[in-house]
Length: 166
Ligand code: GDP
Ligand code: MG
Image (cartoon, rainbow, N blue to C red):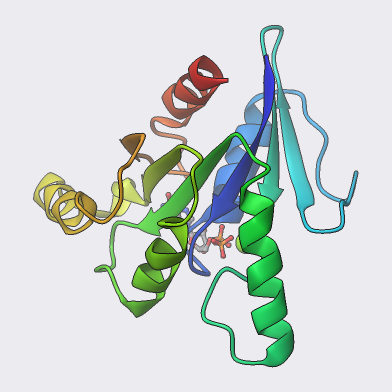
């Protein structure tokens, strides 16, 4: 089993931390190994059973310039080539304009989209329920998975769900 998974989300939600956690758990190749025209391979998670190539899709945020606009369109078409999308959010912050912008873009995408609610180590369970409520009707989520990328909570389970889907 193998596949490509795109990580998207606003800056500072914990995308890089999540990748480090994933890569740290299993033998994998870090960054810079390969570069396609539109996607940067950030890391490869490898087990006996599966290989997941994580890619970064830069530029899925509100474009400020013509170049940014071009990058945004390129990134969006790149999403058609992946097997799944992880939309990472920060549980400590309410859904904002930046998240809504990404959600609007994701409405045009046909791949399964997982809502990854990160930084759960920093929030009370009630807060987690509230943030789930803010997002639940925004998109047709494949799954909603609360994690702590920093501490590793639920990251193994997240990987298992992804592998199942490949
Ligand atoms: P990115 O911009 O989405 O790649 O975000 P980073 O991975 O660089 O993380 C931004 C900040 O959030 C860093 O200071 C991380 O240590 C912190 N961070 C990421 N994940 C978690 C988490 O699960 N819990 C906590 N408490 N902090 C986190
Ligand atoms: Mg990063």
